[in-house]
Structure formats: structure tokens, C-alpha cells
Image 1 (cartoon, rainbow, N blue to C red):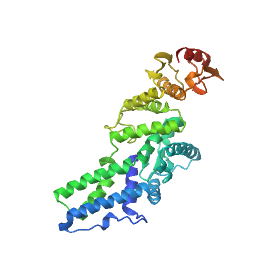
Image 2: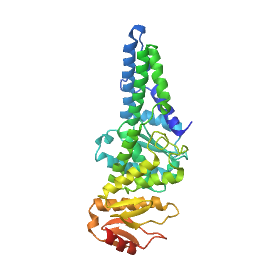
Image 3: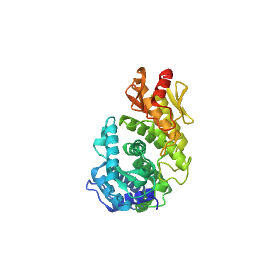
Image 4: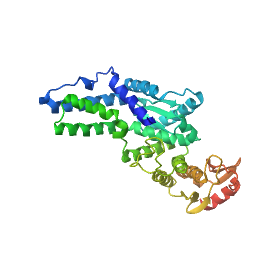
Length: 363
């Protein structure tokens, strides 16, 4: 059973075995005879809708889901990873709160799983689980924040609960119209659908785009390098290939989701717009006003192409904040545009002084 299926099983176990102290009617208690099958069907839909909402939006539901999910996945209990995750989640939560106060009603709960595969997931109830493998593949917090921001986008917009209910409504509608089962049969149908939700219910393409776009705003408002949004997908492409089937997690693998290249390029376009169309990247080279600025050298941990998006992100922030009106300077081996850090050259790059001279000519 892969990671997402484990999460599904944990959530289903929570829904079917625990009772919330908020007056939600368990679906098992709904009964009707053959004459009232259609009414029973609507009762079941209403009951399931209430249950899903309770687990998705209440602290009691969150606690129940957290308990069951942690039992299913295990908890790493490593202070280094716990502290890194807490730092990122707290920054992102504060960023989200600037435009969406609902996060203060149900703050996220998070933990690190010992699983070494590359994945993170936000279940219903704002429960965030991040695999140790996420930290193994992404070596900087900016890129991790992009993935977590995407998952929090799903959480803020209730995508998992909505997709599950949408599938349930379709299946219940089929059975009611077919008049093939009674209310108790519909109850079984609901439970069967929920228990297989990873295979039968998924986040659709539109919601994936919505979560990507929300992540850009969350990351930028939290003070991370906005270029990390494109950089992380460049890293994914290099590590796994475009639409590779062996990449773990629903954010990356379903065939009907945006491709890795589409996602990277969507973020690159956002960065171009953020810079008021002054800065861009093409084939790993950073351009300013259509003129070549730099093709960054690769480092031991980051390719030239991945690194180019971090440079683009800093340039975009500089233009957005009006710093392009100030001169580019070199200080302590780092290139600045006004007060904005643009990049710190490494072996294979021109010096900060050379880059400052070049940027002043073309900015």
C-alpha cells in the first residue's frame, strides 16, 4: 500500500469507527424500506456530507484524523526535521492568514513521517504529513515551502472533501435512479466509495492549478524566494523526468494533472509578470530586458537551470519592489540590486563586480 492509500485507509477508519461529539448522524443508522428508497438516498447523502464537513472543518474531527493517520504512517520524532517543518509551516500559515482568516479557526497540525519516499499530503481537517524523503530530495526550505504551500492550497479550498463528496453524489445518484438498492445498500455504497477514494476520487486538474497558483502567493508573501516555485519543478524534471510514473504522490503522478514542464513554465510566466516583464529565463539563461544576463554555473547540489530560477525570483522581487531604480552593487561577494540580494557567485560564475556592471547596463 503506497503512502496516499495509507492516508486514505487511516481517514476511512476514522470516519467509520469514531463518533464525533457534535451531533453528526452516523450513516450506519439510516434505514428505510423499499417504498422510501429515494428519500433514504437523500438522507444518506446529507448524512455523509455532514460527516465529511465535520472531519474537514472541526477541531474534534482534526484530532480524530490526526490520531488515526499518525498510527498508520508512524511519526519520526526527530527534532531537526520537526523544527524545520514547524518553521516553514508557521511562516506559510502567517502568510495565508493575511488573505484568508479561516486558517485561524482551524490551524494546521503537522508531523514528519519516517517514510523515505518524496511526498507530502494534506488530509481533511488540515492535517499535514511530510515524509522524511521530502527533506532528502529538496535541500532548501524555499522549495519545500512550495510543495507545502500547494498542499495547504488544497486544504484551504477543501479540495479533498469536495472531490470525495462529488464522487459520492455521482455514485448515489446512479443507484437511486437505477432503483437497484435500498437505503442500507446506499450506505454500503458510500462506505465502499470512501474506502477506495484514492482510486475513485482525485483532485482534478483545475484544482491542481488552483493549488499551484495559491502556493505562489503563499510562498511570496511568506518571504521565500518566489523563484523556488519554478526551481522545484526544474529539479523534479531533472530527477524524475516529465510525468514519470515512479514519482510518489498525487501532486506529481496522475496522468490528468498538469505536467512537470507545464507547472514549471506556469511559474516562470508568473515570475516574468512579477518583474513587470523585465526578467525571464530561457534554456537556463537569465535575461533582463531581452538581453543575456547570466547562465549560472552548477553547484554540487543544484543544476545551472534550477539555479537560474532562483536568480529570476530575486530579480522579479527587485523589480516588483521598485529596486531596479537603484544601482546594482557588489558587497561581500554578493550581487545586489538596491537592497535586494540577486545572487552570490560560485566557481564558474562571473564575479559579483562583473555582474553588477553588466546588470547596470541592461536593467
